[in-house]
Structure formats: structure tokens, C-alpha cells
Amino acid sequence: MRTKISQITQKDIGKEFKIMGWIKSSRISKNFSFIEINDGSCFNNLQVILNSDIPEYEFITSKITTGASVSIIGDLVKSQGKEQAFELVAKKINILGECDPEKYPLQKKRHSFEFLREIAHLRARTNTFGAIARVRNTLAFATHEFFQQKGFLYINTPIITAADCEGAGEMFRVSTLDPENLPKTDKNNIDYKKDFFEKPAYLTVSGQLEGETYACALSDIYTFGPTFRAENSNTSRHLAEFWMIEPEMAFADIKDNMNCAEDYIKHCIKSVLEKCPQDIEFFNKFISPGVIDKLKNVLAQPFERLEYTKAIEILKNSTKKFEYSVEWGTDLQSEHERYLAEEHFKKPVILYNYPAHIKAFYMRQNDDGKTVAAMDILVAGIGEIIGGSQREERLDILEAKMDKMELDKQSYWWYLELRKYGSVPHAGFGLGFERLVQFVTGMENIRDVIPYPRYPGHCDF
Ligand code: ATP
Ligand code: MN
Image 1 (tube, helix red, strand yellow):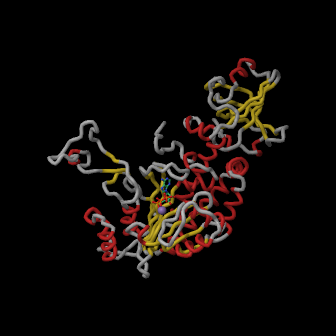
Image 2 (cartoon, protein in one colour):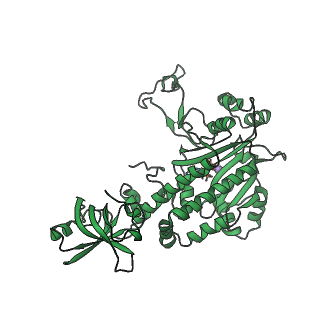
Image 3 (cartoon, protein in one colour):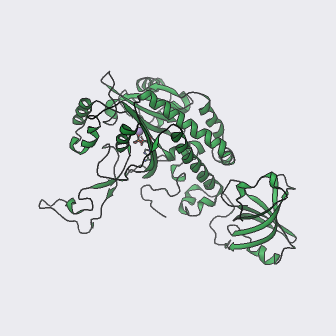
């Protein structure tokens, strides 16, 4: 039976193992060869020693090339070298899949992340992308663990939707109409009655509104699913397809929301530090020096909680030159968000009570009449990682707000009924999963923390 490399420890010295994996590098010589094998189960490679007494030594070593896949049976011995505690002395080796070293795009040198995006089908074999995949997996598991331990139900909200949830993001259209031959109405408009859903449909930008309906029945729920935004944003923080975690809690206010969000982020960081030490060590050394201290610093103290109004004062009094100036009422740019978290407070910041007019219609109006109970969490290197709010549970205020924002109340009839039948205070937030992976790994570009990034002009693989 095959053993994964992650399973093998120092205690196993003296035992026989069969391992399978890909050759990362090799040093071939006449009497013996060293081969580094990785199977993705952990960051570290297993060093294999191949002695020339093995049958067909010369033929086999001619096939030992970077990228080739192998199956090896051998005995685990204490290593002579300083690099590793143990190594495998091969007794039998099978080349499963050869790899032409002249053609293999992943040479044993450092490739740029831009280049690796062009070979995204192979990049998971590199140290960096293997480590990202494992950290991403651990963060997904930690997400479920956190909410399940707290008694939240995992629910699945629709991916195709007919409602422009917030009137917020630009949406991707879902249609089976033939774009070359669109059916028209008498008035020469597109006849959506002939489309699959008999009305315009889109990919969801958020599962929040549907999530609220389940929270208003089951108390605490969370979603974890794909979200789509057709914005033309070419930044290192935006994707057209990304994953979002959206908890929603009934009988909860903005404070409960902040506490939940802070605990959740801390739980995720703890989990990665505990479960992926080799991967994080790698990021700390080669990708983002100091990232481990940064994460430990996040765990060590409470997040700063600050009203939007106070943040504007801080930004206006700062000597830092910003590209965009701020006034009370302006939406913060990423440069402002980062300044607050990175430079001013040097820890994550929960900004709350934003001006009503820059936030979505469903956010709960505060008694001052100007602000809403919204909260964003800002972190170093990224800016906004979470956006959330207490929701407006009062029907009359919600309807008045929708009228003011010229939203079609008819199409939100079901959402409004939550406020008619047993309305409760409730709150929730959305965390962009890729931004969390970015934060934890210190990777600079969001396109490198999702296996196959979708962004303007790019939908390959
Ligand atoms: P931003 O201002 O950074 O564009 P937003 O305010 O439009 O974000 P929300 O609608 O509040 O984003 O979405 C909730 C969370 O989803 C954000 O806090 C962020 O972590 C993440 N997110 C939003 N848009 C994207 C995107 N295009 N790609 C990746 N993650 C995103
Ligand atoms: Mn937001």
C-alpha cells in the first residue's frame, strides 16, 4: 500500500514504505543518485537514495527527470545529510510517467507569478502553489469548524438569481437565448419570456438576502459558495469569480456581528499556524517576510473598533499623502483602509457606523438618522476583508429607504415579508475567501490564491 509523504515521521525509521509522487529534482551520479520526491501531501520533499546495485540503474536514471512521476519501494533510514532527518533507500523504482526535461515548462528555477498564471494547470506543482492549496484547504475546513462549533447551519443559496440582490455589483447574465438571433417583443425589446427562466437571470453577487430568510427561521446560518461580479476592476484584490462566506445571525446586533467576525478570523489564523507550519514557514521566508509575526500580532490583541466619523478625522489629520482626499461622506479607498490598519493602528480595524448613503439599502438606520449600523473589517496589505451590517428589521423604515433609493419593492416582496411576519433584529457579514487566503499567506495578487482566476479578459483553463 502506498503511504503519503506527510504520514512518514522519524519514528518510522527502519520501516519499508511504498511512496508515489513527482520528481522535484535529482542529482545523478555513477554509483548513487539523490532524488527529491513530492506528492503534495505536505510541503517537504522526501529524499530518496538510489544505489547503482538496483536493476537497470543506468536506464532508470536516464528517466529520472524533474516532473516525472514515480512509484518507489524502499527502507526509511536516518539521513546522513543535515537537510533532513530521514531518507528512503530505494529497493524498487517504477517510472510511471516520463517527463521530457527539454519541454517541461517548470524548470528548477524561480518563475514569475505572471508566467505561472499562463500554465495554471501545472503551477500547483510548484512550492508556492502547493502551499497555497494546502493553506486554502485548511482555511475552508477551519471555516466549517468554526461555524459548526457555534451551532450555525451551513446552507446553500442559489447561484442563479433573478434579483439584482443589492443593486450593487455589475452582474453576469445567464441566458439560453441565441445572441445572434434574439427574440423581440412588439416594441422591439428583447423578449425574455422566451428565455429559459422567462425573465432575465444572473449569476449571484451575494447570497445574503436568501441567507437572511433562513436565519429568520433557523437562528444562525452561514453560506460558503461562489459569487460573481462583472466589474471591470483590474486590481490585486478583485476577481470576477470568488468565494464568499456569509454568516447571518438572528437575534443579533452589530456588536454580536463584530465579535463573531473577529473570532472567526482569529480561529482561521490559529488553525493555519497549527496545521500548516511548513507552508507558513515557506511564505515567511520567501514570499512575505514577517508574515508569521503579523499573524501572531493579529491573534495577540483585540481588533481596533472605530466609528467611521473618527476614522475620517484620523485620515484628515494624517500627514500621509493620499491619492484621493476624504471628507465625511466619502467612501474610503483601499489606500485609506490600508493606512488605518497597516500604519495607524498596526492591527485589524473594525470600522462601523458608516454614512447611510454610501451603503446598501438593507443596513439598519442608526438613531442619528445619518449613519447605518454597517461594519467593515480592514487589514494590512489588503484593506477590506469583511463587509457586514445589522439589517433593517423595521418594515416602514426599510420601505422608505427603498423608495428613496428607487428600488423596485415588488421584486423584493419576499424579502419584505420577513419584516411583516415575526421580524427580528439580525446581522451578518460577508468575507471574501480569497482575500483571507491572501492575508494569511501574504501573497500579493488575488489571482494567485485561487486555482483558476477569472478576471477581465481572462477565462482560461
Ligand atoms: P471592495 O470595496 O473591496 O470592492 P465590496 O465592498 O464591493 O469590496 P462587498 O460587497 O462588501 O465588497 O463583499 C463582501 C466581501 O467580499 C468583501 O469584504 C471582500 O472581502 C469580498 N469581495 C468583494 N468583491 C470582491 C471581488 N471582486 N473579488 C474578491 N473578493 C471580493
Ligand atoms: Mn463592502
